[in-house]
Image (cartoon, rainbow, N blue to C red; front, side, top):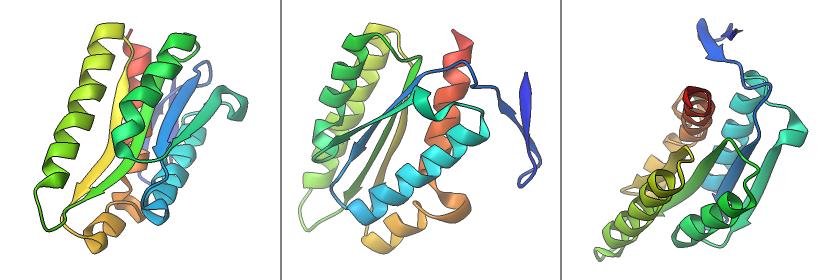
Length: 154
Protein backbone atom coordinates (compact mmCIF):
# COMPACT_ATOMS: atom_id res chain seq x y z
CA UNK A 1 0.00 0.00 0.00
CA UNK A 2 1.24 3.48 -0.82
CA UNK A 3 0.55 6.68 1.07
CA UNK A 4 0.27 9.97 -0.83
CA UNK A 5 2.52 12.88 0.15
CA UNK A 6 0.50 15.87 -1.01
CA UNK A 7 3.37 18.32 -0.48
CA UNK A 8 5.59 16.65 -3.06
CA UNK A 9 2.89 14.69 -4.91
CA UNK A 10 4.75 11.39 -4.49
CA UNK A 11 3.64 8.05 -3.15
CA UNK A 12 5.20 7.08 0.16
CA UNK A 13 5.71 3.51 1.32
CA UNK A 14 3.34 2.20 4.01
CA UNK A 15 5.34 1.85 7.20
CA UNK A 16 2.36 1.30 9.48
CA UNK A 17 3.56 -2.17 10.52
CA UNK A 18 7.23 -1.30 10.95
CA UNK A 19 9.40 -0.71 13.98
CA UNK A 20 12.19 1.76 13.23
CA UNK A 21 15.22 2.60 15.36
CA UNK A 22 17.02 5.93 15.03
CA UNK A 23 20.60 6.43 16.19
CA UNK A 24 21.20 10.18 16.45
CA UNK A 25 24.41 11.98 17.34
CA UNK A 26 24.17 14.79 19.88
CA UNK A 27 27.29 16.54 18.52
CA UNK A 28 26.28 19.61 16.48
CA UNK A 29 22.88 19.21 18.13
CA UNK A 30 21.32 22.13 16.26
CA UNK A 31 22.01 20.28 13.00
CA UNK A 32 21.27 16.76 14.23
CA UNK A 33 18.13 17.95 16.00
CA UNK A 34 16.83 19.25 12.66
CA UNK A 35 17.76 15.97 11.00
CA UNK A 36 15.88 14.10 13.73
CA UNK A 37 12.79 16.29 13.33
CA UNK A 38 12.85 15.67 9.58
CA UNK A 39 13.23 11.92 10.06
CA UNK A 40 10.36 11.77 12.55
CA UNK A 41 8.16 13.83 10.23
CA UNK A 42 8.85 11.47 7.33
CA UNK A 43 8.26 8.35 9.45
CA UNK A 44 4.88 9.76 10.52
CA UNK A 45 4.08 10.57 6.88
CA UNK A 46 4.83 6.93 6.02
CA UNK A 47 2.44 5.81 8.76
CA UNK A 48 5.01 4.51 11.26
CA UNK A 49 3.33 4.59 14.65
CA UNK A 50 4.91 6.81 17.31
CA UNK A 51 5.29 3.90 19.75
CA UNK A 52 7.15 1.94 17.03
CA UNK A 53 9.92 4.53 16.76
CA UNK A 54 12.84 4.43 19.17
CA UNK A 55 15.49 7.16 19.28
CA UNK A 56 18.89 6.28 20.73
CA UNK A 57 21.04 9.38 21.30
CA UNK A 58 24.80 8.89 21.12
CA UNK A 59 27.58 11.42 21.88
CA UNK A 60 28.92 11.83 18.34
CA UNK A 61 28.99 10.36 14.86
CA UNK A 62 31.84 7.98 15.73
CA UNK A 63 29.53 6.25 18.23
CA UNK A 64 26.73 5.70 15.69
CA UNK A 65 27.87 2.22 14.53
CA UNK A 66 28.02 0.96 18.12
CA UNK A 67 24.57 2.43 18.76
CA UNK A 68 23.30 0.58 15.70
CA UNK A 69 24.85 -2.65 16.93
CA UNK A 70 23.14 -2.31 20.29
CA UNK A 71 19.76 -1.88 18.57
CA UNK A 72 20.42 -4.73 16.13
CA UNK A 73 21.14 -7.08 19.03
CA UNK A 74 17.68 -6.36 20.43
CA UNK A 75 16.18 -7.73 17.20
CA UNK A 76 13.19 -5.43 17.47
CA UNK A 77 13.64 -3.16 14.46
CA UNK A 78 12.84 -3.63 10.80
CA UNK A 79 15.31 -0.87 9.86
CA UNK A 80 17.56 1.75 11.42
CA UNK A 81 18.14 5.39 10.57
CA UNK A 82 21.48 7.04 11.36
CA UNK A 83 21.70 10.79 11.91
CA UNK A 84 24.85 12.79 12.45
CA UNK A 85 26.96 15.68 11.26
CA UNK A 86 30.65 15.68 10.40
CA UNK A 87 32.09 19.08 9.50
CA UNK A 88 35.43 19.65 7.81
CA UNK A 89 38.03 21.20 10.05
CA UNK A 90 41.58 22.34 9.45
CA UNK A 91 42.94 18.79 9.24
CA UNK A 92 41.74 15.64 7.47
CA UNK A 93 40.15 14.34 10.68
CA UNK A 94 36.66 14.64 9.16
CA UNK A 95 37.55 12.37 6.25
CA UNK A 96 38.95 9.68 8.53
CA UNK A 97 35.94 9.95 10.83
CA UNK A 98 33.46 9.78 7.96
CA UNK A 99 35.23 6.75 6.47
CA UNK A 100 35.13 4.92 9.79
CA UNK A 101 31.47 5.76 10.44
CA UNK A 102 30.25 4.97 6.92
CA UNK A 103 32.22 1.70 6.82
CA UNK A 104 30.89 0.69 10.23
CA UNK A 105 27.30 1.36 9.19
CA UNK A 106 27.70 -0.51 5.90
CA UNK A 107 29.34 -3.52 7.54
CA UNK A 108 26.63 -3.78 10.18
CA UNK A 109 23.85 -3.57 7.61
CA UNK A 110 25.36 -6.28 5.42
CA UNK A 111 26.58 -8.57 8.23
CA UNK A 112 23.31 -8.49 10.17
CA UNK A 113 20.95 -8.20 7.20
CA UNK A 114 19.28 -5.08 8.62
CA UNK A 115 18.64 -2.02 6.46
CA UNK A 116 20.51 0.97 7.92
CA UNK A 117 20.01 4.25 6.13
CA UNK A 118 22.62 6.97 6.07
CA UNK A 119 21.56 10.35 7.42
CA UNK A 120 25.04 11.32 8.56
CA UNK A 121 25.93 14.44 6.64
CA UNK A 122 29.52 15.32 5.81
CA UNK A 123 29.80 19.05 5.15
CA UNK A 124 32.54 21.54 4.37
CA UNK A 125 31.16 24.05 6.90
CA UNK A 126 28.26 24.65 9.29
CA UNK A 127 26.31 26.70 6.74
CA UNK A 128 26.36 23.78 4.32
CA UNK A 129 25.38 21.40 7.13
CA UNK A 130 22.46 23.65 8.07
CA UNK A 131 21.25 23.73 4.47
CA UNK A 132 21.33 19.93 4.35
CA UNK A 133 19.37 19.61 7.60
CA UNK A 134 16.44 21.94 6.94
CA UNK A 135 13.50 22.31 4.57
CA UNK A 136 13.27 20.20 1.43
CA UNK A 137 17.00 19.46 1.64
CA UNK A 138 16.67 17.75 5.04
CA UNK A 139 18.72 14.56 4.77
CA UNK A 140 16.98 13.19 7.86
CA UNK A 141 13.79 12.95 5.82
CA UNK A 142 15.64 11.20 3.02
CA UNK A 143 17.24 8.72 5.43
CA UNK A 144 13.90 7.90 7.06
CA UNK A 145 12.23 7.35 3.68
CA UNK A 146 15.10 5.09 2.62
CA UNK A 147 14.82 3.07 5.84
CA UNK A 148 11.09 2.48 5.42
CA UNK A 149 11.52 1.63 1.74
CA UNK A 150 14.31 -0.86 2.44
CA UNK A 151 12.49 -2.44 5.39
CA UNK A 152 9.68 -3.31 2.99
CA UNK A 153 12.09 -4.88 0.48
CA UNK A 154 13.01 -7.78 2.69
